[in-house]
Image (cartoon, rainbow, N blue to C red; front, side, top):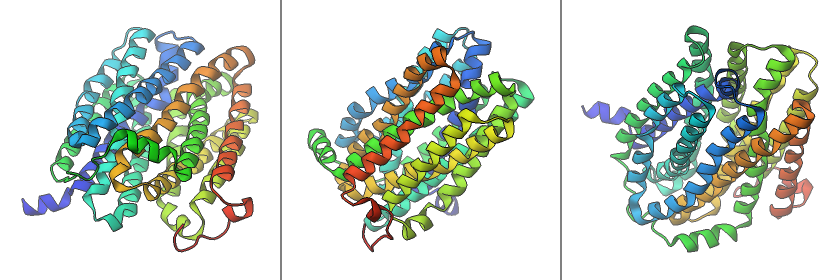
Length: 400
């Protein structure tokens, strides 16, 4: 019994919880737009609303619940967010029309909004203060593996049992996530660790230029990546006649590149400034998205989408490390909730705004326009990093 406790440490329990719910979400993600259009008869605008609704719900939810966490209720709120995910995925697989699916996605966004920032913050309370960076890196690595495993599970599920079965598989994964999170939460002692005035935390975060830099960078990146993940499967189906299995395999290849990059992020951050890593990730994403829009063959399309995973492997964890190092521990839950909102806002605006571009100008033009967001992100890094352009790419000092 004693050995069992050592195997599932509080940090590992929290990480495994996030791993399984991330896998569940990513198993569904590749086929969501195809499921909505082909099984439920959704229009392109409906697809944009479907994806944006999830992010709108997440964005509205995060900060109010951060104020609850700041009063020491973070563990209870986190577990209450895990519990409904299993039946929610099940209900999505049984949806009879697109409106039903949109309403279920809104509920899902509400609960997923809590899991990311709360798990990330609570994971740092499982280790000594000097090991916060290590805890953040461990947590993001588990999430990255979930991002890879999810599409692989989705590919097998679609190929074996059909599109709807993927939601039932996701439901089982969400249940496992809840059980591991429950185990991990038993050993977390965060009393007083993040008690602070939410208003004060917001003010401190907004006045921190490194936090603002990460917020704007992630907003731009999220806008772009969500547009691509929403409309690339439909574009691939229209232009190259890709079936559901190949689409899921493409997401799996993307995730392999993502995980391989994220595993190396600690080594990268010792040799290159984190701000430089953010910039390199955005440059790569702009090139890959443009390549998707002009790909003459299914092979180049598949490769370009896969290599976009390199950017996803670099940009979010680099920004998370900068945020963790630029705010006080007592403000971390609130800061993470605001920071995660940047992803929600980008994911909310991207698919909805580009739905009208897709309808009137086509998929390729929507992808072209979304590549501009990378340049806006680089502009934010240049303006707020407090360094000249050449200095952004210089080797890091002992303390950044």
